[in-house]
Image (cartoon, rainbow, N blue to C red):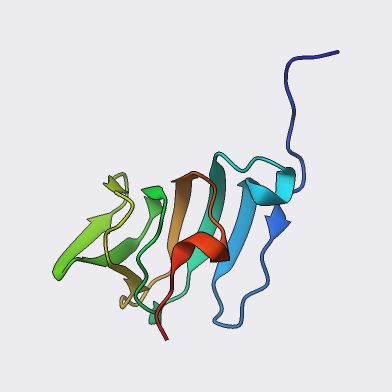
Length: 119
C-alpha cells in the first residue's frame, strides 16, 4: 500500500460570482485538517466580510488581490503571500482590472460552518 495519494481531479466548487475555486485537498477529499485550493478571482470581484475559525495562507501566482483585515487594507501582488490568522475579520476582493490567480491554504480545512460570513 503506497504512502502517498495523487490528486488528479480537484473538486470545482460551484459559485455564482464568476470566481473559480478548485479544491485540491480538503473536506472534498476527506482531509478536514487542511484545504488547498487554486482560485481565480475575476476583475471587480468581492466577498462579504467573514471571521474564519481557521488560519488562511494565500500565495499570489499572478495579478493582485486586496485584503481588508481588521480595518486595514493590504494589497498583494504576484509572488507575495500572507497568513491571516483565525479570528481576524477579513474581506477578500479583486477591485483591479485583471484576474487574480492564487493558492489558498486553510488550517483546518475551509468549510462554510467555520467561515462565519456576514450578510
